[in-house]
Amino acid sequence: MLARLAIGLSALLWMTAAQAQQADPMKSEMWETIRAEHLGGGTIAFDDSIRLMMPERVETAFSVPMVAKFVGDLHDVEEFVVIAENNPIQGVIRMTPYRPIESVGLDMRLEQSTPVRAAARTPDGVWHVASTFVTVMTQGGCSTPNPEGGASELGAIAAKTFDRVGGASRLKFKINHPMDTGFATQDDGTPIPAYYIESMTITDDHGPVADLHTSAAMASDPTIILDLPERQQSVKIDARDSKGLLFEFTSNPPTM
Image 1 (cartoon, rainbow, N blue to C red):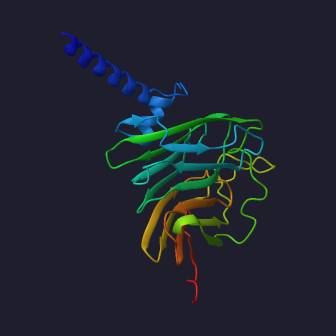
Image 2: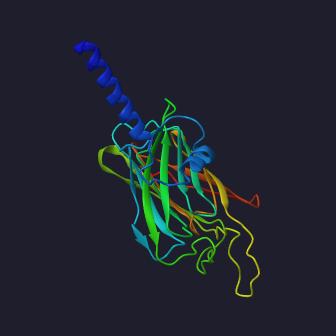
Image 3: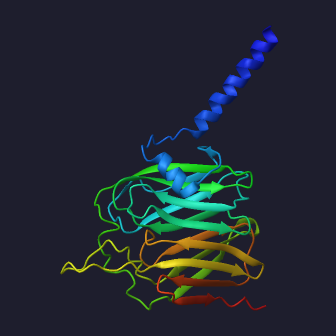
């Protein structure tokens, strides 16, 4: 009798823990809609597998930094998504990695105060989700034009790799592009059409690194940082924007 009671109690505790993992810590009324639209099926785990780092309050809403660090064993990621719930463009980036990646950094736009989600899907179909709430002090990151964005040569890519401890590396690159959302207007009220980088492919001397699908929720002149567990000898970046223009960058391998 006591054994059956212990088994039943263990099962109840396991179910309670599993339910807690799927309960939205932000208690957002939009969560189920967000989940269905951006993550689809699969189990949700609100756990500590991703460390999401963002400022709690921002003044410059058209360029908000974000870093998502994959913690512990969460390096075998099949898909990575960043979502800003209260943006007119909720999906910021969707990445398909082809090798282990330790962290992802980028700059995004926030229209107003919002929960921000970073979600990583592992081979078992589980979406590991990190959430944070960002208070936007001056609203309009998507609906106010950034006067400095895209001022340089359109599509010019600057990239650099950095050696890290233990044979790891960091890739940081920036693409000059206005990343217009379609929600901003000129001074005379004329709408500024949507125009943005919509895809990027990153390869190096070992082969494919990642495919990225980006949106105008990225900041103007978007910067992306990827931390990888191995050094890179050369890097090639191919990008395509919403008008079909192609841009590329190839680094020269180091000489001996």
